[in-house]
Image (cartoon, rainbow, N blue to C red; front, top):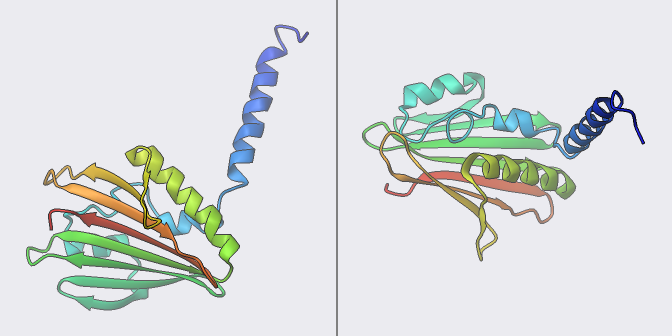
Length: 171
């Protein structure tokens, strides 16, 4: 039986092992793609103005810009990319974010999908698996009290492919 002074050390060692085991399943792309835990996704809040959203993204990767639309393309590594698009209403309010992640290997999509599932579960509560394969979460906008839906699917077939949508359902 361990002594009283050894118990805290054993607890600390077990906790450290647990935390290291959790990080072993983390996708090498997760932090870069998530970018920020603020807002609904990548620091962006549904309802935000186009000027606010532009400050969140690297303008070197801006591919297309219109008064109601922004499109960014990013490279993660050779053969691994992601796009982020933002759609705005006539009142200059963000109503939809779409992120599509393209990975060379299907196996790289699984841990990234799990990382995002865990993140959304922590942030919005346990998600629901829909009949069409999407995982969904709902929250309420603090600005407009509109229902915001977060939907995500791992649609990998011959390559890794994950899509995440964040939408204002009242739009």
